[in-house]
Amino acid sequence: MSEFLITEVRGQVGFITLNRPKALNALNLDMVRGLTATLLAWEQDPAIAAVAIRGTTKLGNFGSFCAGGDIRFFHQAALGGNPALEDFFTEEYALNHLIHHYAKPYIPFMDGIVMGGGMGISQGTRYRLVTEHTKMAMPETHIGLFPDVGGGYFLSRCPGSTGEWLALTGATLNAAGAMELGLADYCLNSSSLDAAWAALGAVDFEHAQGLSAWLAEFSVAPAAASGVEREAIDRVFSLDTAVAMVHSLEAAQDPWSERTAAILRHRSPLMLHVVLEQVRRARSMGLGDDLRMERDMVRHCFHTAHLERSGVTSETVEGIRALAVDKDQQPRWNPACLEEVTPEMVAPFFASPWPVSAHPLRQLT
Image (cartoon, rainbow, N blue to C red; front, side):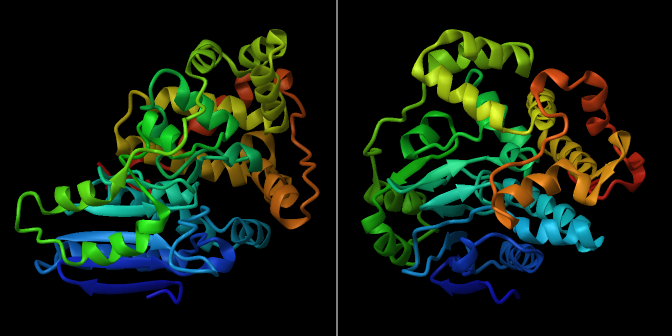
């Protein structure tokens, strides 16, 4: 078991606490393996009827769910040729699949930051809890990556073109926005989280209404409006290409369009094209096929053979450098602008480097 996971059983519930507060509970390989082993064991344990998961902060038991994968590890592993990088993505995506297909209620308390890998360990359930402090996003284009961990699958199923908007911009949702777009199910007041966590251990899951009564007791309406500009999003992000989207935004000359265009111009031009293709392909895919596609894509992100880029020259390593290592916020994207990206640069991201029989996620359905 990872030193960054705390597990306990109370009543009929297995409780998991992500306990890596200095890193905002970012997932490393040991945490992924610990979560997988715990969930598999509890799934087979007849004494456990449900699982709950939360993230700690330096101030208490709640406040930050999970900021994603450990991108500093990604950077170091890519530069050092560490094979654990490949293991991380294979095992993380298998964990995401397990959660989507989990046989028992799985209840993530998504207080505070819920991004990237944090979405991967929370989206595969009907009991996604958010609070007035929730900050939910898939911001991977900021680091030259794409919304993985099943992001193609769950973002493409958001209403209208909001999935494209979230995937390309990395926009942050509050509780109301997450619920409006189908990425959360219930809202709780952050002040009631300790009580709700404690009370969950007393729920009688043999009673048909046990969990429903607990949800009814603690859930509330979101305190703020969603702030999601649905009409503008659907108008712009339904366009055929990322270039057309940005040109439309730049021509509009209203504050929302100007802000959104500026965000997109700062993201990786290459990955904006790749991500748009990802989301639109995933809309017609099942989860297993989507995760296999994303596993192919992430290999190409770090070893972009068709562009003769790998390690320090890869788009993803450069994006992480600019955001989290040197922190200069000046990524040297290649190509440097959207208009320079060609279809020939994008298409190979979707070609699998493995034969079907040898794919590392071949067992997923």
